[in-house]
Length: 179
Image (cartoon, rainbow, N blue to C red):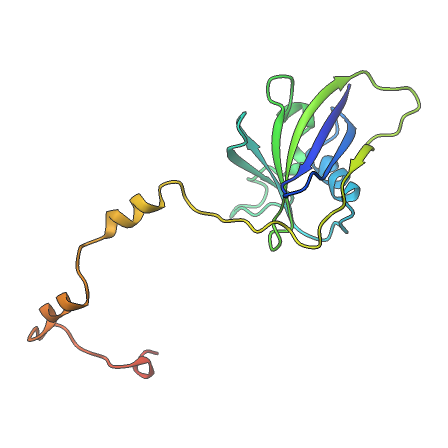
């Protein structure tokens, strides 16, 4: 079977590619098809992330094994597309180049019979030009304010006088005393 994907760059303008690839190809094959169709050189690290129906990121599937124990972590080449994506699970997130954070929303749009004589993977359609820079991402936890409040003790600079006269507190001075 052939999986047809729409790969959308997370950007202000509509930039996407439609890619056809065999269902028994791997996530690494899809990674190669994506970076080629968008004009990247393929020299940067990338990862796929499973996600739910509303694109909430879940588990990472990296290009290389970054675990503590070699071989323990499954990587892109370990997963056939049909292992991860099907008619019920159609979405996955792709991040290329962790410095620039090029982020793509990848959605399985169709599953069709293979066309005789076609060579896969294939870029079927391209819309939009890649911007010079990736959209700046703001990574902030949903509960960041709750986290801060948990450690807020209500003390300010005026409360620091509680240490005066306490012999167990030693002032080491400025940075030159820290080695």
